[in-house]
Length: 319
Image (cartoon, rainbow, N blue to C red; front, side, top):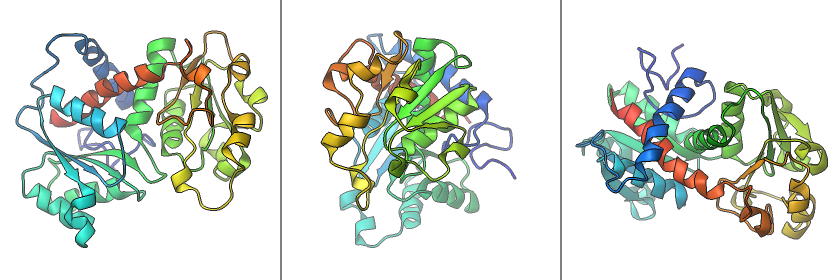
């Protein structure tokens, strides 16, 4: 069966998940993003690569960084960007997701950037476009439920490559609420595809997927074990809005055991980098001294996010 994300010629058709995406495509996206990073330093930050194309941002869930950086990325490629305020749109009046998509297609949409609380919503849209013969319209998943957040995973890989150059000699630790995290799923898929020899996940068992080891990672029950000699520390946000029931004690107790402090970071390699997808809960999963310290690359991640999203949209819009 053909990968639904790739065209018949093996080019990127949609970006829905990093799971099953070939290493060559991931590397191509990272390589394409590199010149866009340099472009951000210029006075004129625009390129005509998507001129005349209409990009619709469909955000059914709150977002600051992702929505804004997608908008900046599309505008830097000279696209026309239409932001749909879903809280006041017709979906609130009972219109189905696919009816909304059909109506936007009738407005000559070329690309949809979709964030949705339901896992699989972007796949559903891509499938619908294929079934209705509208394969020239592309879908980018900007985060769906607990499932995937591919552009976040890609910008994280770009950040690691920028600071560490290679993947094949790294030990990477992902810390926190892996169970509810679409970011962690995308990070794990990308890291394993790019050949990182050891990916560790650290956190309470209640916040780990069952049989997490089957994802190709090593589970570590303590920060002491998990952070020892790592090159990259990827912190996750505690997903309060997705939690049902008492999966963990109070935020203060979580911080005491799993929060990243300078003391715990000292277990990692001296040149280790600290990452966080944002928004940060300071004093819960990360201490301010670390978040603002010289090993943190949290703000560069945001900057690289624009270049990576430009790369994805320019590759999709080129065919």
